[in-house]
Amino acid sequence: MSSLVPVGGGEGPLARCTLCGITAVGPCARCKKPVCGDCCELTEGGATTFAVCLTCVKRGGKSLTAGWLGLLGWLALLMAGCVAIGLVFALLRR
Ligand SMILES: [Zn+2]
Ligand SMILES: [Zn+2]
Image (cartoon, rainbow, N blue to C red):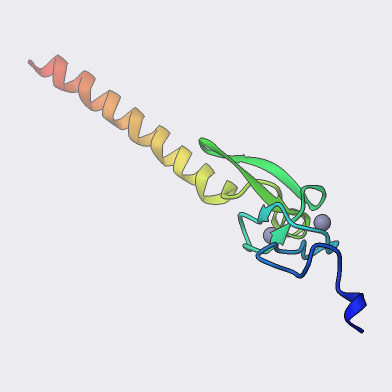
């Protein structure tokens, strides 16, 4: 049965795509499972681009942290507004 060893001489450190089984190119940014290029979608999360597997895309959308990132964005906007108003009042009081 030794002739049934797959071409390449063993598994090695190469991970297999959890969805289709071919050699994975990297881990999913969400669930950390190895995925190949065909089974992931690239999504932008801030400054970097993440690969999210199709399972996670279906489960929670492409965006990695859309929920709290949007919330943080709103909070940042509110904070900026408050700071701006505070600055205006501070300048007027002089
Ligand atoms: Zn795949
Ligand atoms: Zn995933």
